[in-house]
Amino acid sequence: MFIAIVLFILAGLAEIGGGYLVWLWLKDAKPLWFGIAGSLVLVLYGILPTFQSFPSFGRVYAAYGGVFVALAVLWGWLVDRKAPDLYDCLGAAVCLIGVSIMLWAPRHG
Image 1 (tube, rainbow, N blue to C red):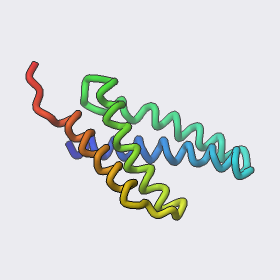
Image 2 (cartoon, rainbow, N blue to C red):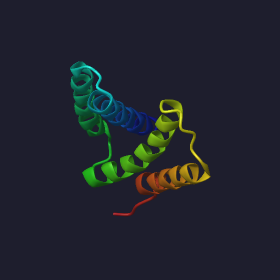
Image 3 (cartoon, rainbow, N blue to C red):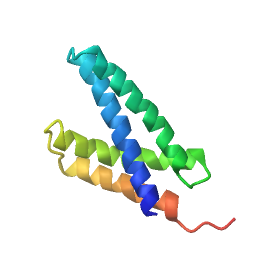
């Protein structure tokens, strides 16, 4: 379970970080290398989930979506300096509960 969580966090940081670099390049007129670096990091994001031990692509990506929501709220707080409000935190918590149910609920068959 620890490895799964670490992979979800790394994939989330790669997606958000790569997207952020592309954002800076296109929206804030940063140098081209920001866009190239961001694109390479986004490729890494596409590779990281393949290391998950869960057999279902759909389940892994659906669960990752919940982790992404929580990480995006944290990114906004720590990098963009936009403090999350109660509803941001509550929504992220609901997403993480959903992820836990999807990945670790006992299944039969």
